[in-house]
Every structure is written in structure tokens, then in C-alpha cells.
Image (cartoon, rainbow, N blue to C red; front, side, top):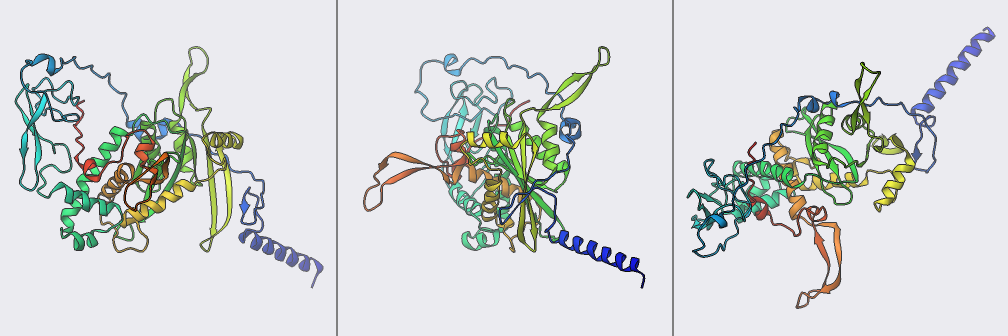
Length: 454
């Protein structure tokens, strides 16, 4: 056999060996840290930034019309006679439902003309209010999920609390004795109410650091795969954005668009996420400004990404369900700027997604439909989204977070053989400064949300 045939076979064998080593991860040219801690330098593919024209929500959003300043209303206490007993029932948050009344839609107790007008109800006593200006009466349950329900509000709150703690509907039916259809209707109402409450309370946020991630789930039909998109603030533990949908660029734009609406105009957070590049395109399309470019007479607008935007990715490579290497990539900004920013907030300074990964486990334990290998999968995406919205309200206002507790300067004695209280429990809403106390599930359900007239 000629010598060149032997050389050709030797080269082929060498190439096959190199390919085999590359498949097993022994040869690669990416900057990563393996389990042994070895660091390797790398060169990543550069991504092209996007602009708001690439976001469907930004294209559909019309410029906000100039808000009409309502005519000033004279407080009712200055209009009415000084005679009569003073107001003894708090009417803050309630409003007159009569569109013809001059106090229509006004929720401030020092302005509107609402007073207590007795109570009604058979299962429990429900407060009734009356507008002294137009004589219209309304129930305290108006604009709440408890409106026109015959079941006592305390029982509804207990059932919904159990569902937010991970109990599935079939088990709740055996424990509480209510039909699954009834509890599903309660969840739908509570979910819509929780979404509106979140939009009203968590607005104009100043969040210096945010972590992004998505969680895979499915409906009863195994072919319909959905992804739960989550955003968390590691300091206050609040979840400003929660979306359910496919894992597409359109959905990533929708998530970041919702986040941008909730943030203050001057807020520019530091972002970290997994290796999903869809976040990069969505972030560059929503954090920046338009600037004029070109010569005189040929000026055009060009989108400029915010100069201080910092975004890092944690890319994890798995093989046979085992983590083999982790790669850290800076998509926007420098690693030094990210480290300094994280240390300035009180963190370690390392690029990570630990907080959002931990909340993924929390939401799987709190929503039975998201648990792994469960029979309680949701049948419809709308029902699953309603349950997620209610769980988020329960997580924000009712359930205390262990990492947010504050040590008391002086322990409080609790009497008997109980140990003195050394910590004050706090919820994410308390840590974010949106409330000063823990709410009960009944208070969340009873909070009136008067529709805002445009």
C-alpha cells in the first residue's frame, strides 16, 4: 500500500479523535469555569442591539393623550351643614358609583360625601355606605372579589390561602367541602383583583438590580408547553413582572415592556439572567433614547442604548442532567462596573442568578399546577395565570419572607413560656415601602379597587 494512503488514514484518525474530544468538552475555546475552578478566556458572538420599533407593544402604544385635569371639588365637609354627628366609619378607598354625582370616583375620605348607612347580609354583616350628596348607597364589597358572594369572606380567604400555599383543587375539595368549580371561580376573581392591585401599588419603582429567568411548565395537554417569565428584585424580593406564554422574542419584549412601565423614568437597573439572548434584544429596545443624526436638512432619528446599562449572563452547560461548566458573559457594560455595582448594593459582587433560581422553587411549592410530576396540572392557561396572580399577591402582602426579617433592638416579651420575640417579620411589600404592616388574605380580598375613569 502506498505511503500516502497511510498518511491519509493517520490524518483522518487524528481529526476523529479531535472531534470526539471536542464533543466531550475537553477542547473548547469559550471562557468558562468548570467544577475544578479552571478559568479560560473566550470570544463570544456579538449581538446587535434592537430599538423600540422591534417591540410589538411599543409599536401599538399610542402617545399618551394629555390628561384632562378634573375640576376641583369642594370637600363635602365644607358644603354640608355643621349639624349632625361626626363621621365614625372610615370610608377611605370607597367612591360614589353614581356618574351624575360630582363626587363620582373620588376615593379620598376628606373629599367625598360617603358615610356609614348600617349593615346588611345574612351569613355575615356587610357594611353599607351612602353618599350624602346624591343619596346613592353601595356595599363595602363593591369592586372586590367578594361582591355578591354568599359564602362568608373568612371561609373564602382560608380556601384561597390554602391554594396559595400549594394545596391543589382536588385536595381542597376534600378538606373544605366546596366544589372545584366554585373554588376555580373564586381563584379567577381573586387573580383579576390581584393583578389590578399589583398595577396600582407597584408603580414608579426604583429597583437597582433585577434578575430574569423563565420556568417551564405545561397544561393538561402534554403538547402545550408554556413558560413562566419572572423578574425579581434581590433586595426586596418583590416580583414586578410575571408573564405566562411561549419562549419567543415577542414574549421577551412583552416582559421587558411591562417592566419598563412599572419602573420610574430615571431608573436604570443592573440586569443578570441565564444565557437566553432574547433578553439582550428586549433590554436594548427599551432602555435608551432617540437622538438626531445626519447633516443639516437630512436629520434622522437613531436609537441609542443607555450608556450605563449593565447586563450579564450566566450560561450553564449540562450533560446527562449534570452541570459540566459555567460561562460568564458580559453583554452590556464591563465586568468591573458590574462588580462595583453589586458590591455597592451589599452583594458579593459575583455575577449570579441565585435569587431568581430560588424563587422558582418557591413558586413551584406555592402553585400546585407547577409542581413536578403532579396530577394537578392546569387545564387552561387563563386559570393558571389567575392562580399565579393570586399567589403573587399572597407572596407580596400576606406571607412573611425569612430573608427580610429585621432584628429588634429590644426583644418583646410574649408572656407565659413563650420565648421573647427577637425579629420583626416582613413581607416583600413592606420591604419595598408599599405598606407598613402585614396584610391578611381577607384584607387583600376586601381592598376596594375603584375603576379609573379615562
